[in-house]
Length: 258
Image (cartoon, rainbow, N blue to C red; front, side, top):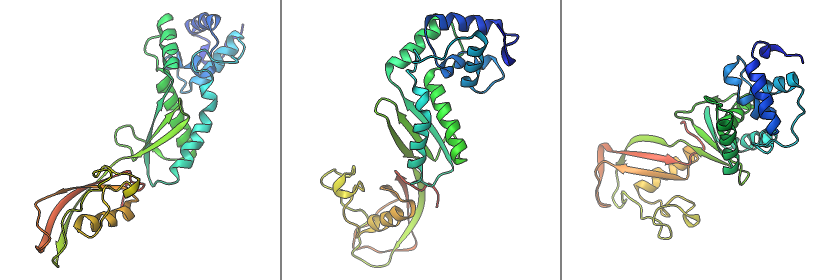
């Protein structure tokens, strides 16, 4: 048996790998993930391949843990790419929803062989999606406050995209009477957003709220704008001078910067 590269001095990895593979078939990703943190490699798949070559184990036809989920990663990255073209963003993060049976098999195997300090399969899946998406798009990953969050649902084979809210501060002047400050909420959804109001929550755009909202819909390609008013006035009043201040938040925006 010939060992190679990073495995030359680590008989423990070889012995544990033999024990694991003698009980169940694993893909290179799942096998390598168990040991990559104790090597200088960054790719679990490459390590898994090195281990398999070192101990002359055949490639698994179906991985016990992920059921060959990793073989479809490129397909989901392509879906992320296609959906991302509708958005203007610099940073992103990615999440995953896996079948519970996959997570349970992963937990069971890590417990069975006392594999501590090892990334769970969900973490590995999101890392792999993130790395490939970065290579394709040159975008930066940001786990704290990303412009866009992709969530891949492997149960339904769908991708959901959510953008961070945009918070704005402004002032408005009302130099003619007859304009209400607030618009009436859509009666079908009570302001929550529905197909009848195009998810805006309002159907009229004659007042201050409506006019500012309409501007922001276009500016940020957003669906919803939520206002916090600093004081108020009735429709017969004027607002002069420096104007009345307000705060607002846009949600589901396809642009996150002015």
